[in-house]
Length: 499
Image 1 (cartoon, one colour):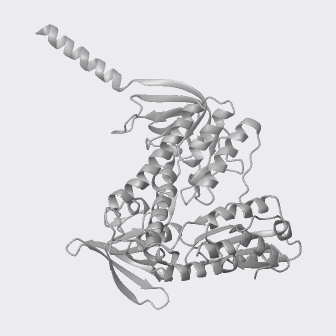
Image 2 (image 1 turned 120 degrees about the vertical axis):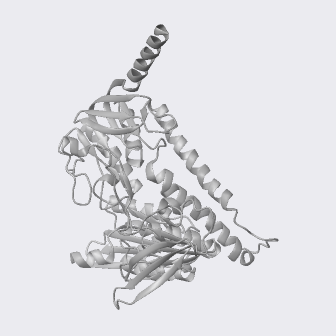
Image 3 (image 1 turned 90 degrees about the vertical axis):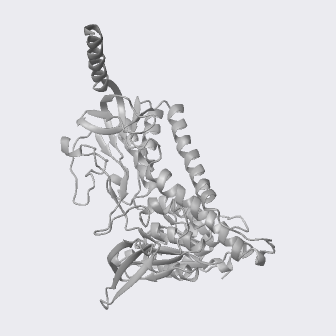
């Protein structure tokens, strides 16, 4: 009996030792966060010869963008648009559809999930290909040169023991999280964030959205096409806060024609579930008249933006500076107060965009290797994947007026574009802003089919300081939508041909 007790005691002691075991590793570069900024930085660092590791607690690479943002929302947008086209456009395109066209919500969601799974798995394969060490666990500062990685409860593949990583260079890319709305509790069932909106199990009869930005309008487009009555409540007098004013008005007009209702200059007073009626009751107030109105919806989407995510990082432990908006403070070389700790992506300054984050990740690593890196913050495109799509890069009219810059405008409607005509998709226009004296392109704004693809040409022109004439004299294939971009540039410095 004594021998058995002794063995049991030894076993308990051994188990305790295993639980507290710490493994020490060394790396040249460790990236905390596996989103667009983090995973791209990790791959680039490995390509440049650094012994590189990436720490990600989600267990899936790609961050918000791949898992609960850009990618799943595009899947829903594309598939809902196809469904809407089959209902509204098939006959005028000469296609007879026999029988009912229905949405299978489970398969609709599965198509989205399959796309996400393929892409996140693809990033993990890229890590293996480039020999990036991948730690699935919580990453936090032990001190300014060491990162502690701890297991995540319930996460498949998580590290089994604490790891202490001794690091020469650290890149923080912890991303962002949904901004809460004061007084409204998100339960991801009836009151949802963008994450919950991506995975609704049924189509709500009524969907109210707080926020008229890109996320809210994209999700509103999805569910409007699927049959929901969508109401957008926006505090500002205009949707799409960073859009050119003329484009924002046109966007609202097109979305309203599709069935979305807008309550602008309106603030939300309260919102709460009424489970007896199976609705969310929302009280809103017109900021001009102070008149209140009661709304009801089966689902309320809170889409008022995102905020930097630093929970559990231990930034305060080593004295990293955090501003009043929760962003980690850096200089123009991405450096924190410690030159070997760089910060990129949503967790610091600038627009919270995946492509901006990727550029920063690459630039930060190049600075580690060569001392030089490049991100042009005056040339970061934005895209809203509604229909018609909206895309822009460079300055808006409002920004040019505020800066006192003399400018000229060139516009061309898709209604005059031959490819748009053949596609029966002619809503929108291309708008080019150029310097009145030099005719250099200052901004480009597109609302129309494939705007998100077309904006790349504008970005290239801006990057190399092209004039409107430079673009207009490039031969564009016919018939293509891109000819509308060429003609808008022609209109800016001279006259368009087809309008």
